[in-house]
Amino acid sequence: MEKTFHLTVVTPQRVVFDGPVSAMVVPGGDGRLGVLARHAPLITTLAPGDLSLTLTQGEKQSFRIGVGFLDVLHNAATLLTESIAPA
Image (cartoon, rainbow, N blue to C red; front, top):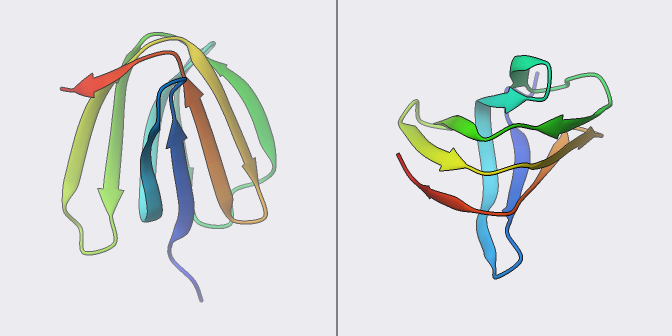
């Protein structure tokens, strides 16, 4: 069973991340939200805060993001944010 999903993180300037991840935690408009492989379809707003990614080999990456949107569908997620910086 597949334990990863494809994530694309986009700002108005560029594509910041485009690849497989095993988990992600985002600052949703109504609180923190975790996403794993095969997550149910979802569209939500994002608040400014910390984005945490767990890559396929277990390594972690953290970013500070601005407001935006998250779309999850068919084992893929697209995160659109106005700004992003390493945490």
